[in-house]
Amino acid sequence: MKRSLLVLSALLLASVSLAATVAEVKKKGVLVLGTDPTFAPFEFAGPGGQVQGFDIDIARALAQDLGVRLEVRPVGFGALMPQAVTSGRVDMAMSGITITPERAKVVSFSGPYYRSAQVFIVRGGNPGKFAWPADVKGKVIGVQANTTGQYAANDTLKPKGATIKVYDDFAAGLADVRAGRIAALIGDAPTVADLQKRLPGQFQQAGKELVAEDYGMAFQKGSDLAAAANRTLARLKASGEYQKLLNKWIVQK
Image (cartoon, rainbow, N blue to C red; front, side, top):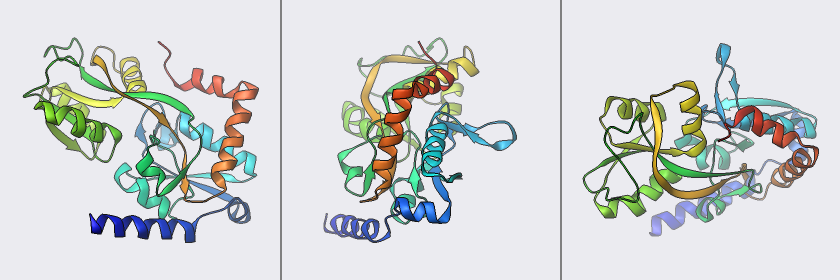
C-alpha cells in the first residue's frame, strides 16, 4: 500500500510538471495522439496501415480547432494508460479509455464522448451455451490487460469461481474464443457489432452487460487541452458532425 501511494504521488507530480498546454501544442504545430490501434471501430489499421476510426476523427477535429496537424502514435494499451500520458510521450490518449475515479487521479479527462458497456464475446452460435448472469463457476473468461474489463472480471466473476485469463493482445483472446479454448472474452459492446459486420457468423454477444461505462479523452493532469477537447465535442454535437461520425463508424443496432 505504501509503495502504491508513493507511485501515485510520483505520477501526480510528473503529470503536473510536464502537462502539455494548448499554447505548447500550437507552438510545435502538432498534437500527438497515443492510441492502441486494435480496437475497431474506434481505432484500427486500415488500408496501407494508416490508423483510422471514430476516435481518430474526433482527435483530428480537435487538432483542426487548435490549428495544428494530428500525429497518431500507436502505443499498446498497457503502456498507454497512464504511463504514455503522464510521461509526456503523447499529448493525449484515446483508445476506448473508460473514465474512472482511479484514472482521474493521474490524468485529466475530457467529458464523456461515448457511452459503452463491457460485454461477453463468444463463438458464433454460442455452442458452449455461455450466459451471464448465470453461474460462471469453472468457466475460463478472457480479458485484455489493464482494461476495465479486467477489473470488472476480477471484482465480479473471479469471486464466483471463474478463471480469468489475461491477454496483452485482444486479437489473441479472440483467437482463443474462436478455437474454443476459453468460454468468452470480455470486450466493448461496439466491438461485437463490428466483429459481426466484418466476420459474419464467427462471434456474437452472450448474456447481459457486465458493466456500463463512459469513454473520455485523457490528457496530462491539469492540462488545458481537456477544456479545449470539451469545446470541440460541443461544436461537433451542435453542428451535427458528431452524429455523422457515429453513423460512419459505429454499427447501429
